[in-house]
Length: 235
Ligand SMILES: O=C(O)[C@H](O)[C@@H](O)[C@H](O)[C@H](O)COP(=O)(O)O
Image: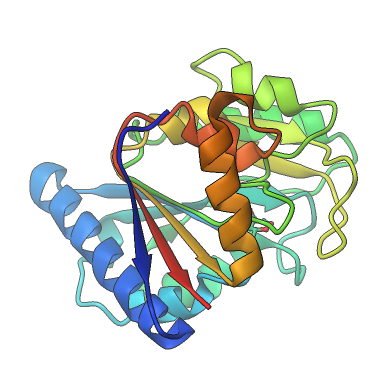
């Protein structure tokens, strides 16, 4: 289990967004200073998007920043469910490289996962930063219970992405996914979680308490992470 988990509580989602945007800007600046480029993974879903809007206002050399989604729904680009489409709308106009990890929807989600993994070989690893969301059911990125759960958690260390069929399919986006693996997430240089609401907070607190035996994907992921993790929360 990770040794240091720090909760950061805010009064509202506006404050939450400001804080996340400020922290991610700092991480990107540090990577640009150290290496001249930055590669970051950003959660899809809805919660972090106000923070992304604010982050995009930061004066950064965006051309040297590569952004991937932590996970993607296997849907065509431009679909309202497509995580990278949401990220691209915000960061492409700034000049960032926003990389689709599922450039083409295919009925074979495992093949989509293998292609995503191959695409990721071209990136600089480990990631400079990863921002995770958490679902009300305790999933994170697209690591869900189902036939691919063990592979997502315990697949070969060098496998960065894989196809995942959530079981049951989540109501808000009932489609197969491609997700970063636990190993890819655990290897990142900086990790942040952003959640809202009491229900998700309880799930995450319980998952942390349960550790490696947690039934919640977020508990299983955090149990492998060795670096300090900041959890940003607002009601
Ligand atoms: O593609 C996805 O579904 C996500 O990346 C996922 O892991 C998300 O972060 C959570 O489901 C929380 O989503 P909300 O922020 O919309 O509650």
